[in-house]
Length: 122
Image 1 (cartoon, rainbow, N blue to C red):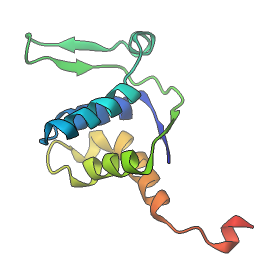
Image 2 (image 1 turned 180 degrees about the vertical axis):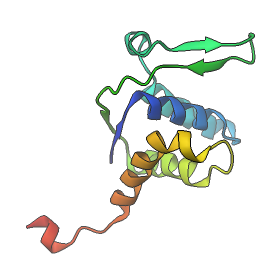
Image 3 (image 1 turned 180 degrees about the horizontal axis):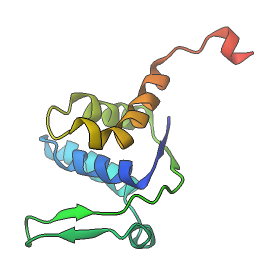
């Protein structure tokens, strides 16, 4: 299953996966997913990615530069895990600032849930 992800979506998904409470085996699954979507050093430079604040309490900042999203291929299990993280997250979202990256991502999950009709195939 595929997702189109820009750097903001990737950074926010990475943070959400890192905040999950789960078993050691599940942590390793999240690490694998985080590694898959992590930004390269060149991508971080392009968006001026920085960690601000005292050690241990640093917060990331970056500039949204409108780069084209990249396509990522996930297994059904990985896709469902990412979807679950998004759908079940209870805290941390502020309605207006997060809408820019969150709504397009949720739309992709909803599109994937729609059954393919015969009219769509033809």
